[in-house]
Image (cartoon, rainbow, N blue to C red; front, side):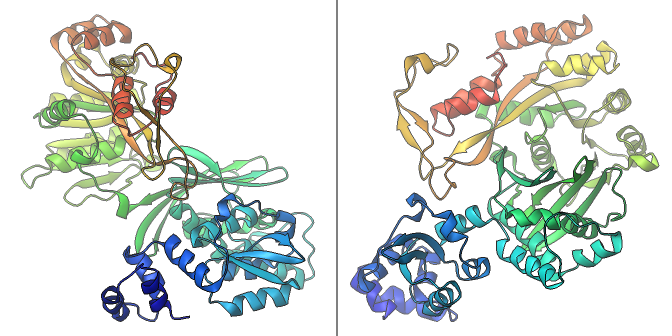
Length: 560
């Protein structure tokens, strides 16, 4: 079949477009290059091929996969050729493929399985996703490892006790290396922030954190037999002690995957069924620290810019772990960065290297704590100081002293809202009058999931669903997630911050000195126009960015 003539005949591309594209193919198929360029859609191409070849085009995500049938096919061939057996039909097996021209792959699968195959066309990513869902990430690689162990006369009935030398050798096995790489690549493909690898009594659970929520990643059951080798491989990559299994260990891996530089923070802790591993993935290519991209309302952004432009004082960013505090502070530093200003940071760890800024890594084992680091850098004549986190009284006191001596100090604090920051500092042992005179403003933030632009649908909520504090008038339409292949069926893609900004005024200073409650400070701030996290979230609901349920989930327990 002539692909170019087929595309022209079906009106998918012109002769001029094809002639312009042919020199750019570099040996790849014309249709695939045109899809990558956005000239045609994969669906339209596959439907044209289906029409020409007399093959059905199916939405494989809607098909019921016969898992028992799938398990009768060799995993390696299924993965290698992206061929997905779906069901039995009239004595044959229906197989989904995105490549109707790869007849050799179909013949190979027929030969090794013994089944007569009837191909149907489906989207490539849908086929790949379903193979991973039913066989697990790295299923073909594990197949190779099982075969190797079987060839050695080892029957995989239970975990095999190995010494550190054996584990180190196995961890350097090409298949184990490939398996770890596949787990990392799949995590990046799903845009995961963290990978959790957790040993259980009867197996192994791998979970990816995507858009703030953990999602179980299907893996073959046989992976549990190679868990020790996987952990050892990760220890070798992060330069940790492979023999130490009694105490927690932290390390770092620098990778380059598909041209993207990735920093992986590794945390390993002993558990009752083995060592638990959490990998934090930091994709440098996706991190653009620009205050304009943070997403603050215009008036709030202007106030925050005024705060970070002050010559001295303390500006705090609060929120739970993983709420984007560090990203906001990096964006603030980039906003004020200038050759005439010296900026020094003390972080644990240094997550992103920022040119033009002096960054210090905390090292508690040798006495380089936040407090000690802060006292030392004051002798380096800084103008602006960033402290990764105020964790204790020592750090809080050092930050206060730095601000009193004419420095602008940025830091983070773990509190539920902005007004609670004052009480938190006082609880750490800082004198109330010092808190009142140095803290210029507090920014609280959370991250809400953003609706997928491809599949979100409008709806009219029941009046009982609308909270009493929702701004009036209520819009006619709200939006809700539907789920599509672009968002992997979740209905959400990415996250966006919502904010609450409190700027200190004389009355807040007086309340602070009087040791007033956080509620009293909050009441005063609300009376003077402070926008709460929930109200900012409601704005994102009104403009169709997120859902009402998502905002209520994130701000549960907060006062509007």
